[in-house]
Structures are given as C-alpha cells and as structure tokens.
Amino acid sequence: MADTPAVPSDPNFIPIEGVMEAPVIFFEVCPTFGNNGGLLNLMLATGLIDSAPHGKVASRVKAVAHLRMTAAAAVNLRDTLNNALAMGAPVQKPEGRAN
Image 1 (cartoon, one colour):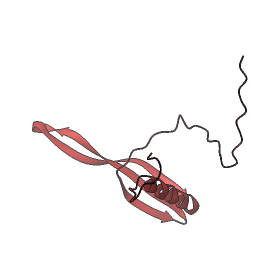
Image 2: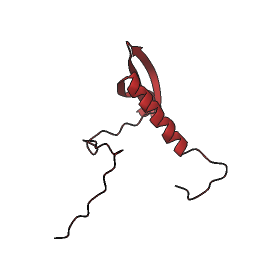
Image 3: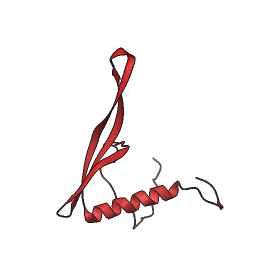
C-alpha cells in the first residue's frame, strides 16, 4: 500500500461540512429586503416562462430562497460578491496568464 504524503497545514483553511449536499441556488433578482433589529433578510427570485393557452407563453417571478443573516454575515457576503465580481472584470493591460 502506497504511503499518502503529508499535506502541509494551511492556517487559512476552514473545513466546511456538507459541501456536496448543499443546494445550488440560482436567482436573477432580489425583489425584497429588510432589516429587523439587526437581522437582515433578502428574498431571491428568478423569472420563469410557462406555457399558456393558444400557443402563448406567460412569464412570472418565483421566489427561490429567503436569506436571513446578521450584519457581520452581510458584510462578509458583500465582500465576497465584490471579490467574485472583480475576478471577472476586464483589465486594461493584462499581465501574466489569463484564467
């Protein structure tokens, strides 16, 4: 049996349980939000197209998730979203390899 090489420890790594079982949530709009005593709430929604009589289609908006979080969690989410957006932003003079 081959020995498994030791993996160097990373002090910044935080193990996360349930990664593979967590739902994937797709949304296109955040139609409502609020702050209830420091607990923030957001509704995530997406647009759906449905068949309608006489060969027509009808569009509707469906809620897909309700997010509840503390202010600290909201700041973390905002910062993470900003970082993810920055990763996809075009650059004027790319130096190095592209992703």
